[in-house]
Length: 369
Image (cartoon, rainbow, N blue to C red; front, side, top):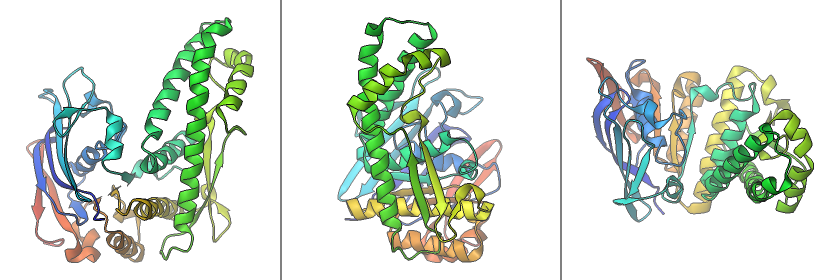
């Protein structure tokens, strides 16, 4: 099965891009240009081809280009795997993001069944030393890449928990108000926990025996000792008094954490050097991509923002070799074409520049002028 890739990408009034259109093949895409030119905006648009708010977690309103403020649109033609689809994303001022697939209005969750996307961005560089929220988001992105229904479970859990939290803050004590919400929370919590454990197992299996220049990460999911909907339902009911005092749920998958270690050194990721922490993140993304290819027969889209600048020449070349061996269309950004010289003709190159307050993106023939 050939890899699924973005064959064309058209942006209209998307952040710094008044208009951009790229015609592409399945090779990696190396995007270079000065800081602030609009490189990350291109891969953010690609990240929105999956459920959620993209790699910047931005609201639809925040993406609208200023000063025009007339709304934005992204149109992508997705090819490969014997399939072809057109995905259109758009938002008008004050309106939520809309999704159309092959001309038909669709829920965001439907995107997960068309293509799989994994990414790594500079904001994740402190992932191992900051709060657990970021690590949960990474794990949920990994789980979603394997199990498209994970998005629906996560959304269902968050909505029910928000409604229950309102009852807690209002000091509602009538159990009848809680029962239905806790039943929905319990069912989705069990699914989320099962999916996360499955995702961790798949990543560990994909790392086992893989020939790579990046360190293997030992992973542990720290969560409540609960597995079934029944056990979660009981825990939520038993925790109401404590939750009411806190004004929020103190039990559930929203409090889980992903703990990583540098396997060869037996060292917690949080105690590793900055370079080692970055290498562990790259290792996880590559393992995610390998596992997806092993399962589906096609490599996912891989988005790597400014990754080349944080790797030495040896690891940079190794990263490019692994991406090409996977057959993945990886979208990578960097300030200069010299950061991608090891790719040579294996990639296609996009130069991005600022012209009078608007970004311009164009395909160029070579990595080095």
